Length: 341
Image (cartoon, rainbow, N blue to C red; front, side, top):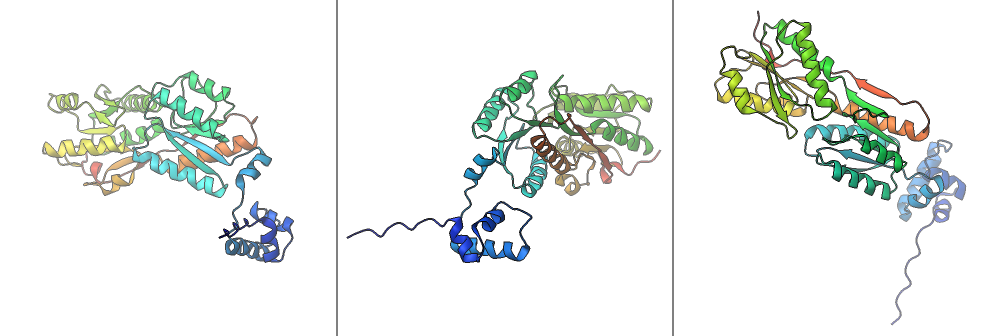
């Protein structure tokens, strides 16, 4: 018994005939050309749907020398902050018909290097990267060696150049210190002090500068670790000391929420006895009890800005380097509101 011949794949000429247009017109529709009138576009798209036509984007990309794919290399994909940032990148990618490959360095420069090499092997047009802890100028040298346009996001490699997008961490912390002073707090500690990357340094430096601006001591700093934990032994030493803190600004919301639980287990009433401020304004902050005051760093906007900047770099490779620092605003909630001087 003879097998039935395999069905022939639908081609663009079939679509054009079904829609009653020329092949050239059908081609303009699949390439997203603005030259086609909406009724014609809809007719062609409907014909594609009915016939099951699949656009061969790979062949088109070869003709254009662009793949319309990018890499997004994150330092810790488990952190909910990066979900918001990724959503912002996707907003811009969707509008520009771009697909994103996501890689997770898990704060390992070695794994990061492997991920970048693999992304290059997949011929991505460029990458957005949050450098892993321990990254150095070798990272930028590798990107340049691979001829891979890039945008650094949230962190930047020491002494590195290139496009960069982040939040104004220092100004956000200054707003937080001012708020605490205005509500009668004078003994402010910083929870999560680290010098492991540029964003951590910017936060800690911002705390020291803000405290100096208000002529307050800045020696109450509790060390943090990259896994969003802090030194509980040092924290308790300060809380039980002769001159205990009355408030805390934390490296991020995750540390702040952990600190709130720590304080509540020890009988503190948040807001009255002790004020807590986080950073990032993750959805969990508003849902906490009491709701957490936080410095909003707008990760979705950072992702949008980074993806837009990468597309600009791809369109104009020789354009001047651009560094975008987005404002960080204080969102006041119950965890810091009630005490007055």
